[in-house]
Length: 313
Image 1 (cartoon, one colour):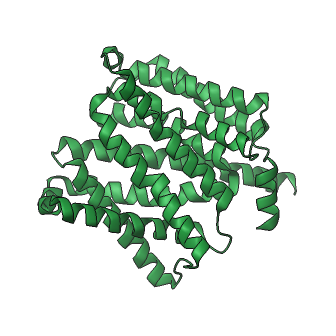
Image 2 (tube, helix red, strand yellow; image 1 turned 30 degrees about the vertical axis):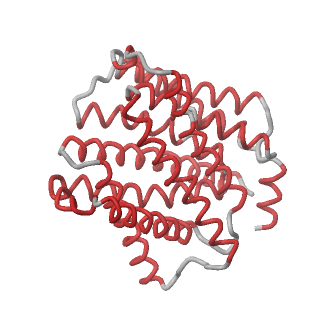
Image 3 (cartoon, one colour; image 1 turned 60 degrees about the vertical axis):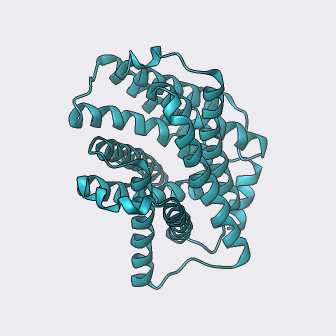
């Protein structure tokens, strides 16, 4: 590969990660706006799940490109949908009300740490200084930003059991990311996988809403239609980008988008919601950028499992 091709590849890799971080932060900002408008969380979930499934289904219909439905692929869709959405969302719903936002977001920001450890245990990563330094630097930057924008929120006393349970959320996300990276069906594209996952999640959300009677509250969507559409668009695009990065560049690298999303969330919060933006936050953002650069240059060498998967695919 020529130097120009290598530079273009690195540029694409970085651009996709930045885009994913931006999409995640836009989605979170839209969720916050929907909540401030009075739209319940369960309506946000049902609407977004059905909207994303509809979006990808129309896209597949236009392209005449539907997800493969053989047994291994169906198992992959189902398990990744469970680990990537249903299980962590259910846990978030149960734990969230018992923790300050600052504490919960910091706990979720440990996903890259979990992802790296799990990847190392199954041979997708090697325990080398560069990736460990990059992940630690990024985590320190993320925690600093979160501390700076919510200095008073973390003073609330919470139960140890709720904190312990909250760590299950980043662990589930990490397991899902490693699972996707290591078990990707070679005959499925990121759009195929995104559509299949969206269909599974939408059916589960609709069934749950019907049984619980939550579907009766559908008119509340009208309280903030732009925010709801932004959630669907942001989450749908983010899902494809997330799957593309995970498939092509590995589980640990895509997890760095968590750090990038915190940077964008701080910037969006300052512009959209009037949150504070200080020199401390900007300095921490530079640390996160540095962590991505370090991992991309020195930490992105695949382990045996990833190398074998690339050779086979």
